[in-house]
Image (cartoon, rainbow, N blue to C red; front, side, top):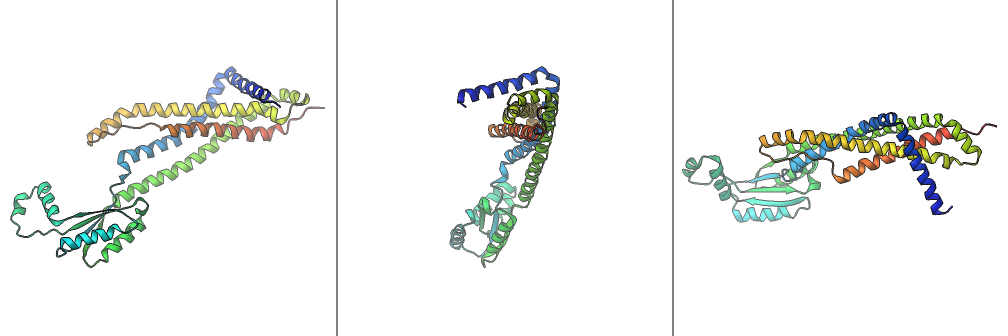
Length: 307
């Protein structure tokens, strides 16, 4: 079979499926609407996770350890310890805050400048701010790093400044897994909706299918229009879901911006990224194809020309 003949048959099947959907606009729209609603919830969860990460900057710079050295440790020794800490493979950056700099900052921002001026000696120690690498920010990795620094004889206290960040990241991880579960469940729902719709269409066109097979039409030829119908249903549902999500973002953008402004932020609610839209549309088309294929493969086998 030449490419032109194959393309012509696929074109006929596509436009035939499109025409049948157009001839029953209400039924087609209701089916597309059900598919869209099934795809909207996972999309909404994805938007929630993406906006939460964007609003917080993923707290990438908030996970660190404060290593307080003993007050009798000289600055040269503190610099040596900072260089030693920087050599660890799980450490991204080490910043040494000398005691004099710490006292100056405290005097500037605490409001106790006059009281601190009465001090004869600096009571603050040198501090190492240690930022772990991204792959070393789990609870176990941070605890291992804390034990490492706490074992130094020059160290007085090690404080992990990450508990609230880790809680937030744990919540995001739960939401990601909920997104995966919801996506899988609603994907099954889309398959069921499209499969049942194709089954009803096959039953409604039973006589036509029998005639087509009687004159030599193969199962692949008979199945092709139903596959295009499934793809059109899935793609239409994905497009409508995209529209629903875009409308929701448009409605919520102003109040979210107002709320962010009250907290001193200029954050603006984001819609689906282009790659997310591509995934949504691709998922709709693939689910439509699979649902139609499964239903057509199952039900077309039972339709044979009558003797």
